[in-house]
Length: 319
Image (cartoon, rainbow, N blue to C red; front, side, top):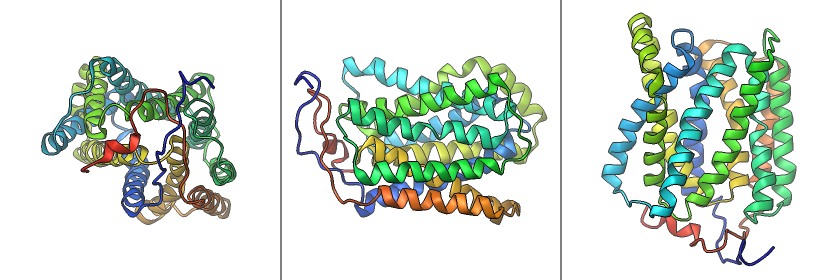
């Protein structure tokens, strides 16, 4: 493609460095635990109200993290992109997914939303110059097959067109925000980006403040504490470590790593909720793990970032 779009770079994919792997593990563990938290709290909170309380708590924690680590204000030309990314990721995605899971069965929602990593792999190869690494092309579909098997074991089989559309919207938001974040990380440090995005998302969720006030009066304390947990761990901490990983590896490989979440969620549900998985579910979980393991093979790789973007690797200096 034209040099106006891409330029060659010595930027190295550091996907398998110990700190990157540790950050990825933290992200996936907390995101897997979010399924349990949402299940517990979702019975007592409206989808928008749940998202608002979760993001309000997350924004407070992220403000502390940003204060400790230091904020480097983004360039003026990037600020609008940061705000748009935050609203799309932390507001639109959350509300779409929460609402979808109230109108369609969990298996269908999981299957549709997990189209996102495949979207990221494809679009990242075409627009971010990440190419189609063999390990990623083989591993991501294997993991998606595992998600498909898990989805077949979902109870209820309840599917409504509006819910299906919302799940697809969530998938598109997931993919678009991952790709957008990858580009923004070339100009904005990960801590500042996550903090500003979360604040923007929280402000966008304020129309649900009245419903949240009402739900807080009727929800049991345990449900409220679950939402607080969602704000601290799967949001503030997990999105901080997610940005750390995304700054150091390709968008496709980072997104494909999230296929480990269904397998972890199955194990947690078994241990914490005594929900024993079926044989098909176990096979699906194993395929998710195998597929993710394959995507981590191949060592380092070089990629072609956007024209004029500074090396993404610089974002992590001093972290």
